[in-house]
Image (cartoon, rainbow, N blue to C red; front, top):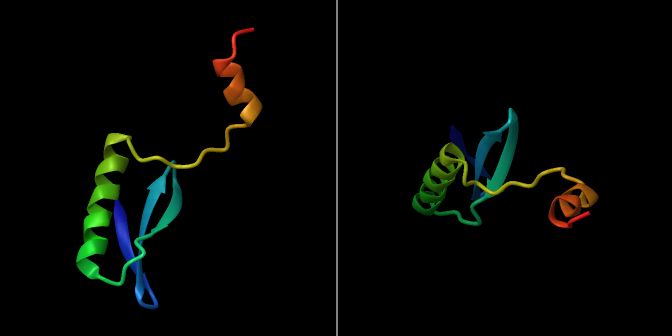
Length: 68
């Protein structure tokens, strides 16, 4: 589930990943463009294709790709 927020003249999309809220700026003051981005975020979040930052340490990430 995602919601559309308005701060000043700009819109933001708020969605939840693993119980934590994330905000994405739509960089637009147009409601129709913002709703389209909201729908895209909801779809990607539901299908698991939404790219979000993680707190994986670089050494752990490299260890998965470098053979011992």
